Image 1 (tube, rainbow, N blue to C red):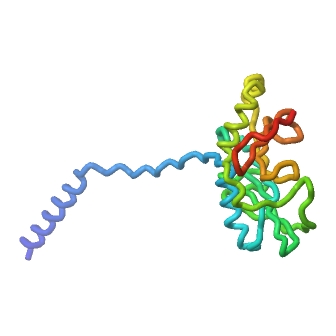
Image 2 (image 1 turned 180 degrees about the vertical axis):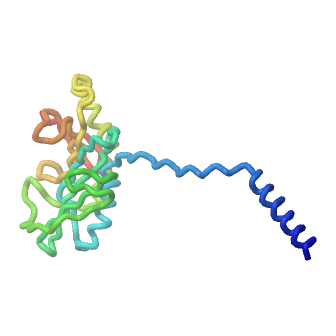
Image 3 (image 1 turned 135 degrees about the vertical axis):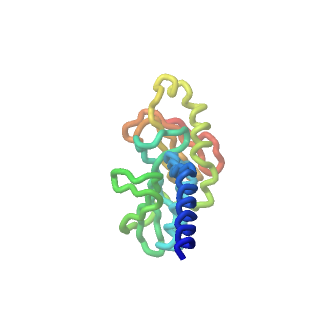
Length: 206
């Protein structure tokens, strides 16, 4: 019995020694998160449209604009956040939705976020809802078209932020992207309209 006990103790000792001699495995490093990247307007619009159909099946976009965020590096034809107003003729209401690639100030949440209902009396001459199918041209392509017309202005104002507005008015047959050199239409002195259905240049505003 004593010999058996001694043998068992020795075996355990050798086993522990072997385990302790093994090189400890390094801890697996957690994969670093990829920095948030801006997205095109059409991609953001479809994300918000998909979510908004749960509010009302007859929704149509009325107006959409990009939102600049300092936390996300800008890229031509893209933005870190977007906001759209959808209308429902059946409900006689409108509702704003946002899409952001990060959580940010101004009540911006990552992904799609719905605002509150508002009353809507119907289309006007300067602002009409339009079909989603009419938006065939994305903002990166619209930007390249606008840049051809605004090359001189762009060279004279390097680094100026670019913002986008999508709307339908009586002025043009299709909804149009307004490519704005500046943080908003109100503070800009140069912008270019591009047809959102055909991609054609429409007009330069100064």
